[in-house]
Amino acid sequence: MNDYIKKYFLFPFLLLLMMAGCGGTSGKNGTNGTNGTNGLAGASIPVLSSVAMSSENVLLTWSQPYGATGYKIYSSTTSGGPYSAIGTTTTTRYLVKNLPLGTTYYFVVTALLSGGQSSYSNTVSFRPYAVYTYMVGNSPYGIAIDAAGNVWVANNNDNTVSEITSTTSTPQTTTITVGSGPFGIAIDHSGNVWVTNERGGTVSEISGQVATTTTTGFSSPVAIAIDQAGNMWVSNYGSSLLTELDPSGAVQRAFPVCSSPQPVAIDASGNVWIGSWGGAEISEVTAQFTGYTYTLGNESMGLAIDQSGNIWASDYGTDFVYEITSTTGTPVTSTVITSMSSPAGIAIDASGNVWIVDYSNNNVTEFSPAGTQLAVYAVGSSPVGLAIDASGNVWVTNNGDGTVSELAGAANGPQYFPCQYSTAAGNTCPQFQGGGNWSWP
Image (cartoon, rainbow, N blue to C red; front, side, top):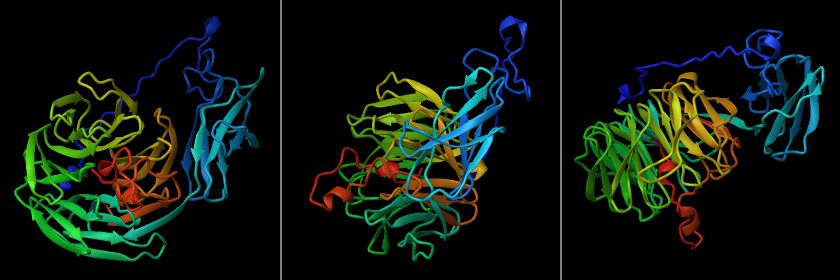
């Protein structure tokens, strides 16, 4: 299904508001003339963002308030401070270098003005990380992580699944042959791996390094997620159906859903969410099998659900990321994130931060729960899938170069653990098994 990753429409919108300031003067920046709102009241505070330059270095950049003559940079290892000054500059950028691994750093900036020092800017965070690259198969798409921390990757163009069993710079990789066009992947309660074969119309099960074709008769199956009871939910791209399988892989029922469905996720109440590649909508099939449809953008590529039950949907066709903040028939939907280019895979970390693959820019971007950009991480070519393991390592499949990138230690851990984490200790499942958050789409 190579034609899935195509950019059919690109229409970013740029709205320039030229507003006059007090006393008949314009509100533009006194130095570079680019910020048309800096002359307004309250615009003396910089707006801060960050870009990861390497595993231990982060570049802080910010807007230039009207009348600023310099800036002071602060950091803390505690969210909200207290902050300590780490440097000053007269430019709108500052490179923080050689940060020790394993700690999250929080940064703010103030502007030095003729009337004194501004208040703190917004906060951005950076967690120093190590970068590893793993060769897998041809055109990797879906990714999932098992209870032991092994990473499983569906290689669409060579009909294999790769297992990465070591999370160091010299990994051990095993290749297992499955059906035609493996795409989505998920792990069940027993640690078995389930893979959709979109060109072959089948679902394969991998148990003990052995793959068997368990179920046939699908129409281009792509995404797969597993609920608390161990039932599997598969989106059929070719027939606009959502199929439920029991834990053995036998078909139970099928539901008509949105046009050309792709990503699937399951919330804490057992409701199944499906994104549409062919239409501007997200479908919800409730635990009582009542259907709802939510109008969003176009070409949905990723779904994730946060601890509060909010649904996050990346929309590849419009470059937007949406949040559905109510899971009823009358949802509250907002466009939270727009600073993306062809967003794809999406996951939530233990802090509630949203991690999104930026396909066209070969990046992964981290956002706060409110949608504020926190950091940008460079990965491989044409990234698509995303998962976060129990140690906070962020894993990304790079469709364009047949690799997997590991941002070791970049996150604070996943928001949800697979059910095996608790059942292995004799406990019951946590609030949400999280199959949809551990596989992409």
